[in-house]
Image (tube, rainbow, N blue to C red; front, side):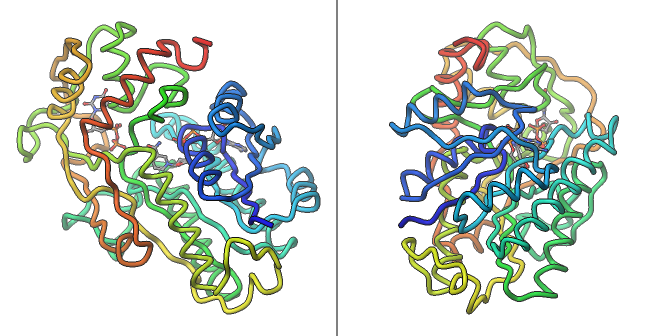
Length: 358
Ligand code: NAD
Ligand code: UDP
């Protein structure tokens, strides 16, 4: 029997791509999502892409009873925990919503996992936990600090996971700190589908390219960077998805398990992982202007832009040291900025209104 993975938030942007990667790597998956920021259409398209119907449960991670039922009905080996709210601005306006959803929701999930004796977790953390870094590239030992409730919620969960690992060595808790995920599945069938006007750069650029938005505002051109605009470590979402499979493989290897072992008693033995934070980035920085130029070239579209004031809370530069992921997980990002733009453009031009285009 293949190991079964519960994917919370599996209908969302990164979760949906990871479902495909997990399926291709031979895992069984159960998707658990409350659809607060995603749609059934995404799940339907993932099913089409993998050629079989996905087990999907519409539910909230704060619903302990429903979660317990899932762990009773399915023999879950581990959880990939993507479910969470992620808009920084909204988190400043509605901090309790973010702490409730992201922190309380994770506590509920962990409690249900503990009761079911399932102690393998891969958590979606973020480079935001590094705040304004003192040193670049940023490695996992860098100090952590956050300036907004979204970031705090990620940091609080990391602290919880650390404390949990310290009290019970049966837990295997990998926190993957994503840098800037962009791109889409090469089929153009699934991708990022923001609800309102995008907060993030890549979906904003692609919506300008497709004519949905008029002009990009570039927040600041006076940073101490290559061209004055912000520098980030953009990573293709399919590379990121592969990073999750690599993390799961690592977890299994460390515990002397194979993919076919689903015996929970042995699964919790010989644990050597505890709490393990790992960056998922390319290790390369790209400026906002460089990304705009690359997207314009790939799409053949003009991307009108204007410079405007710096965005509050933004930092000049942020890129990963990707060494730990390479050393431990034997994983590294492969896809270039050009491929990130090509795949984003394919998704955006085929689906100008995202999943509502269907
Ligand atoms: P997304 O919004 O597309 O996906 C999150 C999914 O979780 C959505 O489908 C949403 O409906 C679901 N969800 C939210 N709250 C839930 C709840 N209480 N119960 C059940 N389901 C719930 O976001 P994404 O970009 O795919 O991000 C996935 C994870 O990665 C998030 O935790 C996010 O904070 C983290 N992350 C994202 C980025 C990024 O730039 N996209 C960067 C770093 C970390
Ligand atoms: N950015 C921009 N215009 C936008 C959105 C973002 O100039 O409409 C810039 C932002 O200031 C930052 C970079 O693009 O320098 C990446 O921002 P994003 O919100 O995508 O990611 P994060 O801030 O989380 O790194």
